[in-house]
Length: 235
Image 1 (cartoon, rainbow, N blue to C red):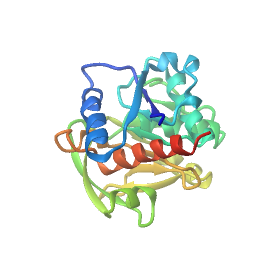
Image 2: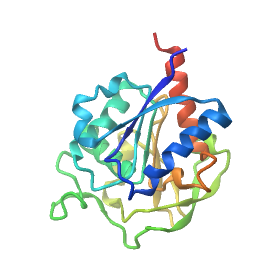
Image 3: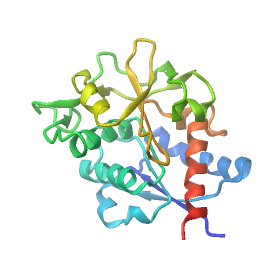
């Protein structure tokens, strides 16, 4: 049987903790949950030449600033338009919102403050209180993909980020179909998903940092299972 192919999109670095966690998580998925994935690292600069539409799953991992913003956005676009199971964490969450705002909402001028600090329209701006090394509660919307795969309405998650959504753009994103299904105790958005997509989940927190790395977070496991399921039904 052909093993499902997973694209890990990020500029791989031993200094990024989520990157170093991946080998143990992939081994745990295989050995404990019988989900075997053939994972390939795709640097953001190489996305255009990598035929991401041939993969069964795409994970846009942290590690910003990415060497190629356009490469990160292309990974989001490929998964979104191609119905490919997609997970985006931390900077992946931020660039998912950026891609959606530009491509779906028509907000072509919006920018990410880490990539264009002087831009007039910042969709992604510095958080008033950075979340690097922080743990915090997240409440999931009942019936959402996030709530279904975790099986809980509230969890405590780990962060390593300093940027989040500018509230000015919340309404147009929602009006164009993006759902925000996870919030912290102050109501700040932490999870986004597309309800009509086979599996499309973006989180500002990093589920790959949960626990000691030996047991995949439920979101990671559900994404892996969706990736494997796509391979089983592909011609």
